[in-house]
Every structure is written in structure tokens, then in C-alpha cells.
Length: 108
Image (tube, rainbow, N blue to C red; front, side, top):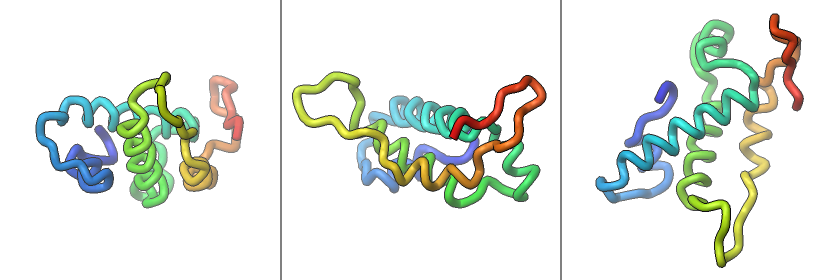
């Protein structure tokens, strides 16, 4: 993982178990990939522009990781919740607004 650690995700999500570290790492990697896809830019690009990955982006990764941990399945017998609007709100200022060299621009 580039912006978070297993311990940060566990602390944020109040997870005490040590036996789920592989799952938590996979969820963290997925959350980071999803955040980069929404922004249509890499964490390295953010570091180049801002000097570090901005706190709202790191928080969005943690929020999304928590959501993915709680909602592990696409199908459930109980109520499912969509990804919190807060994640989009935190990422919107960092979305790529200009088209990339390959012609792909931010869709947000």
C-alpha cells in the first residue's frame, strides 16, 4: 500500500483481530486503486504537485477501506449501503481536470 498501512486501517475501522491482516491489506490496496481511479491521477502525481498525498485523499482511502471491510459482499440478506458521498467530496478537489496525454480526462 502506498498511502496507508494495515495498522492505520485497523485503527480507523476499530479492528482488533490480527488474523485478518491479509484481507485488510487486500482491502487497503483496493481502496487505494479505487481512489486513484476516481481522481484519474496517481499518488506520485499528488506528491509531485502538493509535496505529499493530501490529508483528504488519505482520509478518503481510510473511509473507503472501512466501507469495503464492512460491506464485503455485493449480495446480502441485510441492508447494503452505497459508498459514502463524503469520499467523493474529499476527492473532488484532487481530480484531474485537464485531459491526460492519452486523452482521458476526469469524469467528475
